[in-house]
Amino acid sequence: MSRLCVCLSALVVCGLASAWADTIQLKDKAAVVGTILAVKSDQVAVDVGYTVLVIPRSQIVKITRGDTTPAVGAKTTHGGKKASSTSGFTDVPPPTASFYRAPIKAATSRSVRELVNEIGEAVVQVGTPSGLGSGFFLNEDGFLITNFHVIEGETQITVEVYHQHDGQLDRKTHKQVRIIALNKFADLALLKVDDKDAPKFKSVPLGSADALAVGETVFAIGSPLGLERTVTEGILSTKTREMGGQLYLQTTAQINPGNSGGPLFNLSGEVIGVTNMKVSSGEGLGFAIPVEYVKFFLDHRDAFAYSLGNPGTPYRYLEPPSRTRQPRVEE
Image (cartoon, rainbow, N blue to C red; front, top):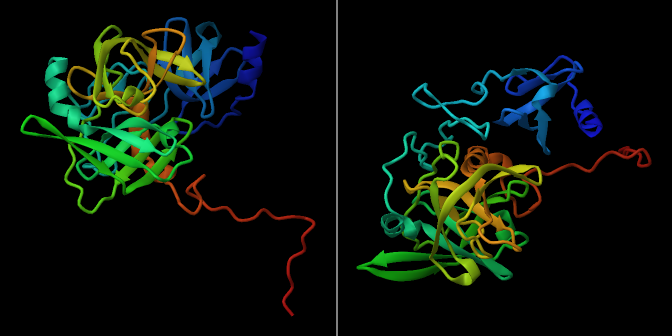
């Protein structure tokens, strides 16, 4: 309990809270300001920016949601109705309506076999000189999502696409691939195929992990160990597995090296997560980044823009001032 108090005391708010943040009032007259990720009967998970705090209910006096976020345990959809929420992100339209598709209402459930035949073309293999991973197209213009760790430190990137023609697969490798945006901490990367002769690509819609229930069927498509277009099926084990200060979806669908960056689908053919890791010492312990984090990354992609001149950040900083260096005096 003493460790919790020390952590929380560092986040005390002296009366002023951001209008868009959630505020949790504590018994010791302190407060924690952040984004509420999950509310349970015995604890509340709060994203404070650089980590996730889990606060016992016994220490909470009051929870106040920000003006632009929904009430605890609910989120507002475009129709004004509420649905259960565990991520803390609202389902708002992207800045560019056509950049990615995010249906408000899930489509009818179908079999994995039907969906693989329909959406399999949108899943690609992402290659670099040091390895490979998976990814998926967001729109027909060639924008795609993968993991940051798949392309980390690389600029020579290839995207292998599999087009279906008359029941046969036509493999095409695109070598003109540009990095658009990176988020190392969320392990997400936005790429774009810039080949001049590139066709219109088939894409997949982004769904909602919040709308899923634990135990529902999910499936992944990717290139584990380089075996392209591999399909694995399982269930959603939990939606709030905390690891390294971030919440992940846990699934029994087999995830292996090479699946990283690939989509995890629901039975409506919508992406509900981006697969990025597994527990190597166990079986059926795969993890995916919830699609709500992906939407947030895409909606704010300008803030994560990649620059060839300064690959660590989209911004250029001036040299800091120094007391030992006198300003130049022009004569």
